[in-house]
Amino acid sequence: MRGNLYIVSAPSGSGKTTLLGQLISKFDDLIFSVSYTTRRPRGSERDGVEYFFVGRDAFLDMVQRGDFIEWAEVYGHLYGTSREFVEENLEAGRNVILDIDVQGMKRVQEQAPDAVKVFVLPPSYEELERRLKQRRLEDDETIRMRLAIAKTEIERYRDYDYIVVNDTIEESARVLESVIRAGAARPANQEARIGEIIASFGGVDC
Ligand code: 5GP
Image (cartoon, rainbow, N blue to C red):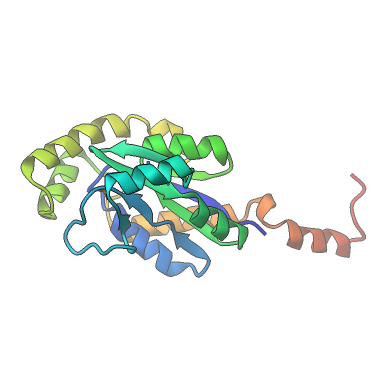
């Protein structure tokens, strides 16, 4: 059975990375797609864990080869999702979660209309600003830019299936967990099992 594709978008600093870490730890068959980016590692980030950090030329070569399902420029850097990683894991029956921006969501949706889309909203502008400053990973100019972009991003919330307001990580993780479990309950994800049950009733006449 092919796995489900989940797209999670959120303004930078909304607590999404911690949230996704908690979520992944709750499911054996849920896997995070590590994107490629041309931005530099931040804080304790490691190559191959949060991102694959590559130079601009290497990234553009990958674009030319069609290695990305989608790619976009976000906050002045390039980010892309590996086609091979996503395809192989979905084929193997694993659920794959993409942490991508609104532009990337649109591109993936064109190719995978069944993808479940979740937007993580910070509780308020002030709280997002506080979280961005608190993590002390960027200079004031970068923080200003991220806040300005967040304003335009959150207006796109209607393009998503679910909205998670990230008041606390624990509660948001619970909501996201329900979304994943609901995805697994869709008929398309239970065809084999449903077929066995129907067969046990002697089949259906419709
Ligand atoms: P950050 O630099 O804060 O880790 O991420 C910046 C933004 O880039 C976030 O909104 C994140 O969702 C987005 N992003 C990360 N990876 C990808 C990707 O592969 N494709 C796209 N389109 N956006 C990405």
